[in-house]
Image (cartoon, rainbow, N blue to C red; front, top):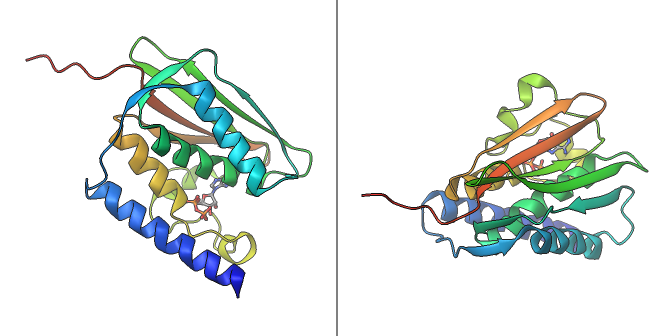
Amino acid sequence: AINNTDRLVSLVNDILDLERISSGKSELHSAMVSAEEVLRKAVSAQQARTPKPSARIFYAANGVTVYADPDRVLQALNNLLSNAIKFSPAGGEIHLSARNLDDQEALFEVRDQGRGIPEDKLEYIFDRFQQGDASDTRILGGTGLGLAICRSIVNQHGGRIWATSTPGKGTTFHFTLPTKPRTNLR
Ligand code: ADP
C-alpha cells in the first residue's frame, strides 16, 4: 500500500510540475551556479535514495558555471540519473559531465551503459507519457513524464536537450544551459 501511494504521489507531482512549467506559472530563480555543486548534489541525492546502486557513478564538472535555477537543474539531473540507474546493468558505469561549448553555453551529459534506445524512439521518449518499451511501466515503474519535465525545464532556460544511443551499448542524454544572463540588445 505504501509503495502504491508513493507512486501515485509522484505521478501527481510530475503532472503538476509539467503543467506549472509549461503554463509559464513556474518562474525561474536563476543565479550563477557551479556545475560541480549541482552534479555533486544530484549524485548524493541518488545515493541517499539507492544506497547500493548496481552501477558506479562518476562526475566531472570541469570548472563550469551556468546561469540557471539550481533547483530546476537538479530536478532534471535527478530524472536523468535515476533513469540511467534504472537501465544500467550490474557493474555498469554512469558518467555525468559538464563542459563549456563556447562563451554562451555549457553542455551537460549523463551517459550510461544500459540497453540503449532505438533510433526511431530517440525523439518520441521526450513526449508526455511515452515510454521506449510498453513493458517498462509494469517492470521498471515510472510514469513516462520524467523526460517531458526535463525538456520543459531545459527549454525554459533557453537550452536544448536530446539523446544519442547505441542500442545494447548505452545511452547519453545531452542538454545545454546558458553560462551568463541573456543580454537583450535594444
Ligand atoms: P519513465 O518514468 O518511464 O522513466 P521517462 O520520461 O523518464 O519516463 O522516460 C521515458 C522512456 O525513455 C522510458 O520509459 C524508457 O523507455 C526510455 N529511457 C529513458 N532513459 C533511458 C535510459 N537511460 N536508457 C534506456 N532507456 C531510457
